Image (cartoon, rainbow, N blue to C red; front, top):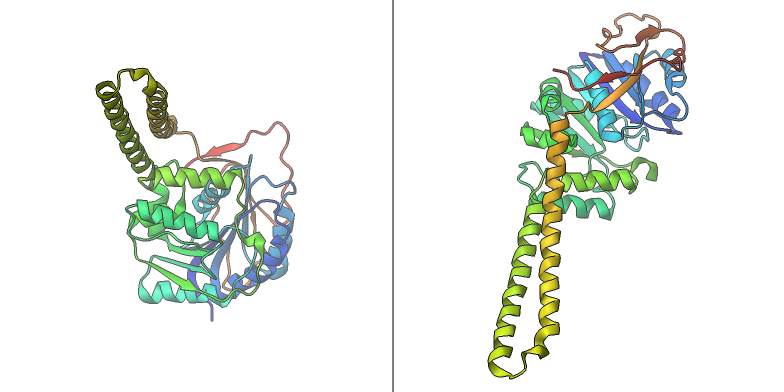
Length: 348
């Protein structure tokens, strides 16, 4: 028996080789369990356009799909925001990789848990992630004031009211996990047994991931100020010790020049700590500049709705407010070289 709730499934992908396998598994499951559904695939400017593949799978397996093609590479968080802005469901699944390492009944468990127990956010994971993830989350949770601890999450299901509240937040560091925690809505976490061990499902430690981790530490915790305070105390104590040493040398010994080297080292160390503190404060000034600029989070090249043939009780949702959007029963046309991408920010 299919549910009558309108459910959206938002997937982020960028040059993924297993997208067809994901669509072949999740697409039929989504169509079989929800009469009103849509699968929103965010193509983060991949080398190969994912639209023909998504359209073919949507036609073959009879599910409704939408492809959001970004004009340039934006990263996971900005790309997911583009898909969530487009999603119209009452409940929204979020997935950042097309690797299916979870049993499909996990999706049904999450939906049942949310609707039965009144949870606005239900997350699921197969484990706690690699060591670097555990260390990172332990550090963030220690220095943040969030009531909901951050952890490794593979799947997320959110209600419409929670998603709307998150999208309305004016944070420029769009780390959804922390933004959901700030809202304070009821949150439950489920475990599942992983069906496969695939490193593709894990986010690689590259420049994008490292930069995001640094932004999270500075934006959603007081790690920076605490480091600055401890550095100031440490080098302040060294400065006092240098003063005491200089006074002792002056009173005890006839030739105070002998302590000049040590004193110079302490002075240099004090200035080093001062510059480190200024560097931390400078990072916060940079983030203030980012907030003042108010640049759009992402830019969309085009949006293609892949709607299969009508089947009883199953219809596609209405198109969203995007330029270049089209409903098609054929692969998307190629964008002309002179076309300008539609720049889209958060919904009002």
